[in-house]
Length: 295
Image (cartoon, rainbow, N blue to C red; front, top):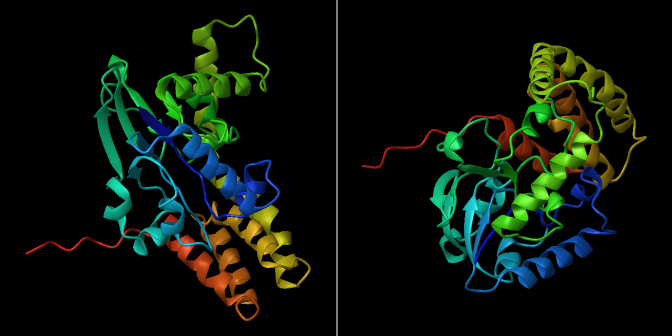
């Protein structure tokens, strides 16, 4: 049997609040995710992991991996770089790639951590399976995303925190997209084509206002940054929670400057946290180191 999954974030306490996961602690989350995994996956099954398996985990990745069943294939996500450096990858994974194309015997499938607009065999009924977006329906691309039935989110947040087979993945994604449609007020007199046209036009407007989005982010995070710098927000988890949100907008120079200012302000009290978020910034926004040609 082949299973698909993504975005566990084992060890990441703040993901519980980010994605509104109903766990009381990171320990409970990790235990439930592990139990769910092994209840679904047998040692001889194949599992495709669409990235972000661990993040800011205090427990070594090896300790988790040796308890997780299945023949594992990793599609690398934006939060996987640090733990991968400390792990004997061939010991735990059949393959480690950033992008892959397979056939499961019934479907042609493209894998990437990030959702793609098009892919090989998209016009012929091929599927694209991804992670990264968790259960977020607020992103500017989402109105178009939900019109694409062959674009499938393997994230645990919409798959009942289990690795799932293809049919279950398909069913869960239909439910995820239908639920998001209930949150918008569509004009019932419009044809399906007119609805899609309105959605696409809306995306164009959002893309055109991307600088305005950055300005809004800066306004939102400025008082939060001031509270951290003044010591009104304390504790590593609380500060980290705010930095996680700010990090998403560090492609903007002004937000990045604010992010750095916060890190400098807490470097004496929370040096390990600062190191962690410098690495997180590098992994998310800095270019990969150039590969050296092998002689």
